[in-house]
Image (tube, rainbow, N blue to C red):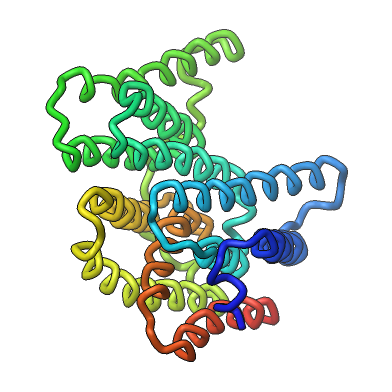
Length: 307
């Protein structure tokens, strides 16, 4: 049933995903938000919901534009179910905003394959990643994707290698100027600092380790098939699939390094993981197994809400 609905890209799919995302936010507000209800809190939740759902739409645009999956909507369904499984990913304002800007940057990186308006794309990608790092410092690690994109597309022009650094420098200069004007010093606006923590105690909560185990077990299994399938993709598209894999690995590294481990940091993994899993679902020949695969991700998040 699920496969028949999302196997083709249809408007109804976006409505269903909208409601799943809305349920995730409502449940997160009920279970996680300790503040008394105010208009300011409601507006904050609406803004976070808008950013999260915009990220889902951005993911769909990025996937369809770059041929990362076939003509289906499994990736947006999985993304919304990931939100429902790990409710904390909807409540960390800095991570939600940083993830949105990272997707903007990733969209520009993947579009480098067309070799059109390359200077602008390189600058934009670095600019958005630098903006993301203002909200969550370790997001700067995704800058590596720009360098890898240039390597994968064998670009040897010196100016193309310098442009991304100018994008980061632009953000730095504007942020310093803002800090001077608003706070009277150079670096007050840089609210995030490079700190690391290896304390995973928070993950011991039953609902979290069940969700995390589900993500990693299915994710690793899908990744093995994904890596194997890359060589069967069109040669022109292979760099894009490699970049998605690297994005997933970087997001995993961020989870390991995250200074505050409340499971919200898993949000960075959702987009690449949704693409990887969608590619695996597409190669499953047995319809019953494909249905079971999706059913597990559909049922488990709702069961976790009861814990």
